[in-house]
Image (cartoon, rainbow, N blue to C red; front, side, top):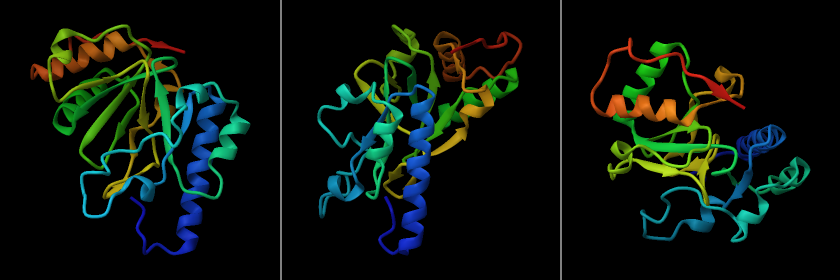
Length: 208
């Protein structure tokens, strides 16, 4: 989370960056949500309380189609986390860093890396188009989580325990086009199986 010893100027710059990112994503049609302030979900004496950012409002599902101007008001003077709802515009597959690194290598080898988010807890998020299901090989792994309908994920630069969320591969790399879910799933399955070969992977296609 944000360091209590940060000077006000740093905190101000962080809030400005958070707000700019939120507005930019909203203008691109991503369903941005305000996350709770770190202090609001951190209990004294309980280091496990702060697991990840959560929506600041219980009715967050009703906010997913908000206009960017509304988003701008959410990220004002208070420091929030930046969240995006999944299941309508995008999905995400959450994996541990070992699988994440292996899958990222395979994706880079194709010349078409997917947008990837890394969290300070060692978890990675691979962003894709919306899917109706994920392969059994991924679903059966307790360490893999599919963020689809009625869910959300944190995006940079959300504050997190012991750090901030950051991009491993920025959306600009894809020209803000999300890779097809099935093709990223296939790469993750291959990485899970320990496959390091490049040849079987066709060039990934994208969808708006």
